[in-house]
Image 1 (tube, rainbow, N blue to C red):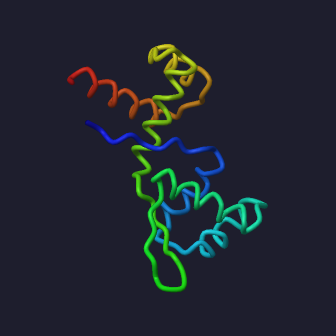
Image 2 (image 1 turned 60 degrees about the horizontal axis):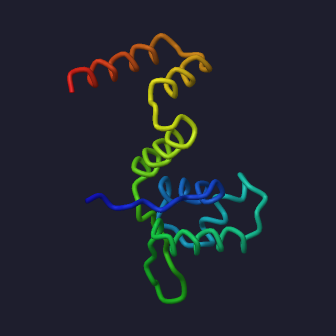
Image 3 (image 1 turned 180 degrees about the vertical axis):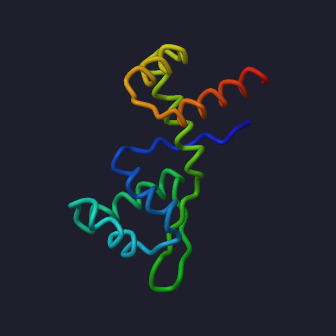
Length: 126
């Protein structure tokens, strides 16, 4: 049985991206890294970290006077879960119309088209 991934809110994704890229970090280090990206108060960011800990998306290590936070779930798993959730909600789980909508609304380079064709060829092989 696969582990159920926590539902991550839009604002929490900002914190998770910092932890995936730079973690483990203290709460103040997360605040510092986000300071150029968002106009949130330090308290807001620390609240988001606490919510992510409660959800099981972030773990922490006690270092005496502070905690050091790390992502407890892999980024690729969260992206896959969020993508599947989106396709279920918006396209009733139908992949073909979802892919068609993304492809029709996107400018792709020849290299990107080649990569997508390779992915589809691999899918065909199983």
